[in-house]
Picture (cartoon, helix red, strand yellow):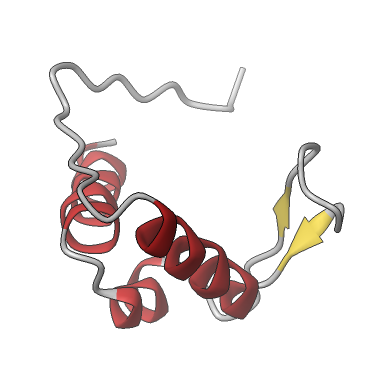
Amino acid sequence: MSDNKAIFRRHVDEVLNQGDLAAIGQLFAPDFVGHVQLLPAPTMSREDVKQLFAMYRSAFSGFDATLERLGIRSSAS
């Protein structure tokens, strides 16, 4: 589980806060498929994620996320 937390922390720090979109290539699997209900396309590839976060960074240039607590749940029952 701590690996998942470390990956998510890197995502927040490097992608969201620093705008390092190349880090997505290290943090998301090559065959990643995201399922998003709020976007025009119901699924997203790793490249789509890069475009989405580039758009977010452009729209919210002063954005900075701070993780105060982080919990990871296992999907195994």
